[in-house]
Structures are given as structure tokens and as C-alpha cells.
Image 1 (cartoon, rainbow, N blue to C red):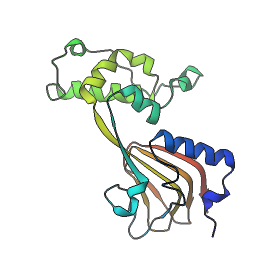
Image 2: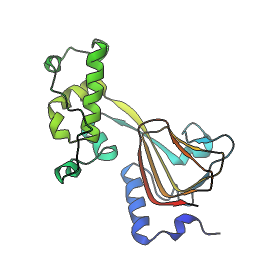
Image 3: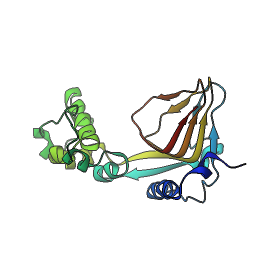
Length: 196
């Protein structure tokens, strides 16, 4: 029986395969993958043998690399999209001090660092460029997880929980009464979303 992924155009399949390769997956390893939610809901974790080929982990040492894979491209804002929802903070005085650690920051300084990291990833990174070294030094390295599958079906009363930093799906079919519940910031890339 053909899967929803089989109905995608060549362009959509190529875009999906290009994205999963960019994230470190072998498209052949996830070929034919069709995840169906069941029970009280589904969180996709690499520690569950059933999803071993659907989850990859990658350690990042550069905020630029994280932005490239998970963030919003700067060109989005340079082409006129509003970034009024982004809080761009000036670079703090401690940024130039190489001996500063994350644990040594005050709660307010940690909050500012997190806000600057968010602005770098999801806003125009040029507006917080002065934070780059500080973010790399204090927030990284960090291991992030990526989820990929050709097709996902979300069944009634069995939500799909979004808990990883990145999801790439060829198709997502939401059956009547099905829900996707987002529990953390995440980049979700879907070629076709089908709501029945």
C-alpha cells in the first residue's frame, strides 16, 4: 500500500531528502518510515529503539551553525519581514571578559544572554552580532536532536508532542480529533500537511 509520502511530487521529495541530508540523516535509512501516534500520545526519542533511525544528535560549537540549520535566515528580515517581536539587546560589559562563566552570571545577565541567543537564531543576527563570541563561549557546545520521517499520522486522542529542536517530515496527516502539541521551541519542516 502506498504511503502519503509516495504521493509527493519529485520536487517535494527532493526538498525533503536535501533537508534530512543537511541534518545528517541517510535518506535510505528512513525510507518508508511512517510513524502513527497511539495510546495517550507520542514523543519521538532516540532512546526508544523503534525510533533509532528517526533521531540524530549533533553537537554544535557555533551559534552560526545552529542558525543555519534551525533558525530564521537573516534574508527574511532584510526582505521586509517585521522583526518588531524580537528584543535586540546591546552587548554587555562582561562580554569582553574571557574568564566569565555561565554560572558566574546573575539571573538578569543569564536572561539577557538567552534573549540575545533567541534574537540571533530567530531574528536578524547582524543586530546582535556583538554577542556571537559570548554566545559561543557560554552557551555552547550543546548537543541537539533532530527528528525525521517520511510520513506521520496523528490519530484522534493520541497527540504528537513536539519536544525536540527540529522535526522534518515529508507528510503529516492529522485525522479528525488529532492534535499536535508543541512543548518546546522547535523548527518544523513539512512538505505537505493534510488535515482530514
